[in-house]
Amino acid sequence: MLRAAADSLGFSFEVLNPADRTWGRFDPKERRWTGKRGLMLDGRVDLLVGGVAVTPGTVKVIVLMLLLLLFRILLLLLPLLLLLLMLFLLLLLLSHLRLLVVHLLRSLVPLSRSTWRG
Image (cartoon, rainbow, N blue to C red; front, side, top):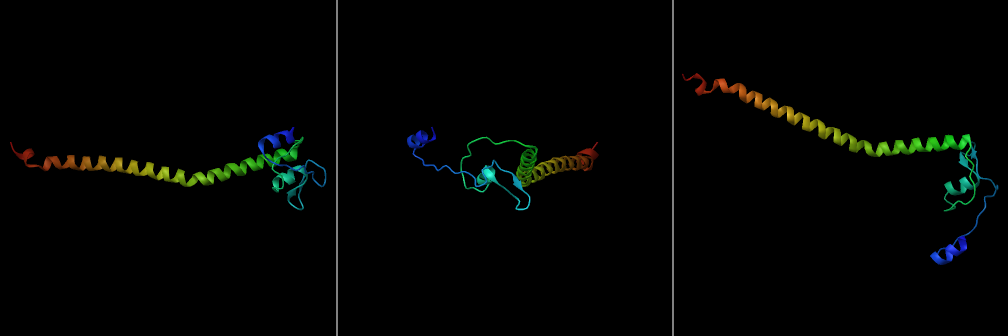
């Protein structure tokens, strides 16, 4: 089926099996994955075919990767969030400044000539 898709879509492929013939496990000494997962994470394959078991160890890694991805997204958005906060504070300051100027001008009204003419 893959060969028929390759022929009709115009791409080539090579079937590659991991040297240890495993789905993959994390090697804490080398700090890398083995097996199919290792091939995918190392960039040696573009497509992974076959079963991949979800174990408690892989769930921990998936959760950690999701947390790291969320942290990176937050780091990318932080400058934008700070800019929006500064813009909000500036608008708030300008609004209060306008009210202060209006109040000061109104307080000068009793000092006008028309106030003291009878």
